[in-house]
Image: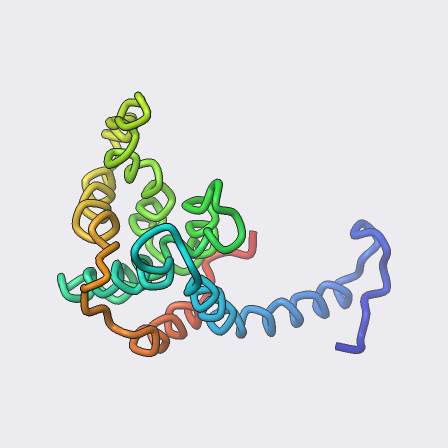
Length: 185
C-alpha cells in the first residue's frame, strides 16, 4: 500500500484518512481465514500430549461434526485453542476475541470460558476447586460449555482417533470469516 494518511495523531485525521485506514482494514479482514489456517498449521509441532495441538483441535472439531453440531459450532471447536499460538496464558480469551465478531453469543461464551471449565478435569490434582466453573451456573450457556468440554475438548487427545483432515474444515473457516463482522470495536 503506497498511500499514507496525512496525520501523525488521530485527533488530526480527516474522513479521507479514515477511509484509507478502513480500506486497508477491509483488505486485511479478507485474509483472516488464511492467517487462521496458517496459525492452526503452526500448532502441528511437538507437544507434551500424545498428539499435537493441531491434532487436538482437529479431533475436537471432528467429534463436534460427528455429533451433528452446526457448522459455526464445529469451527469454534476447531479454533477453541487457537489462542495458544499467541498467548497460552489466556488462550481461551484470545480465541474468543478472534471469533466474537463472527459467531453467536453462545459460541463466543463457550470458547471464552472453556479453559476454566476444563479445569474440572485437572484442578483437583493441584488442591484447587474443580467446580470453580460453577461460579457461572446462572449463565444460559453453562451447560453448553460443560457439554463442549465433556464431549469434545477433554476427550480429544487420542492418537488412535480418526480425525478429519484440516482440508475438510478449511472451506468452513473461510465461510465463517467471510461473514460480515458484527462490530469494528
